[in-house]
Image 1 (tube, helix red, strand yellow):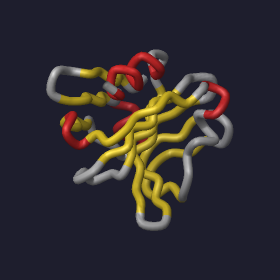
Image 2 (spheres, one colour):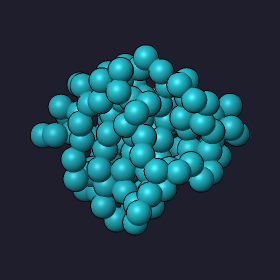
Image 3 (tube, helix red, strand yellow):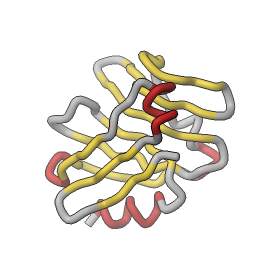
Image 4 (cartoon, helix red, strand yellow):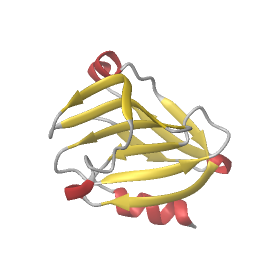
Length: 115
């Protein structure tokens, strides 16, 4: 299960070995200065919040989305599962334009990042 942790200098995202293999993702550290906004996505909408085409990654319809999703001029790192709230983080100057990460404390993290 993906672990999202807020530190004094940034946002750390850690993936399990299975997630790394199946989603073709790596652990990520995003500096706080690169974060332009954050919001919590309700559990009922977390899978629907993923936009674009998977390239590369894992997509199990209605269950799990993990990897990179690309759309017109944007790229997102995604790790969401059915029934779990998600944290959407908008970025600047990073390889991704946004992160969409399933985490049980999405609302608290969004509030902390919004300060």
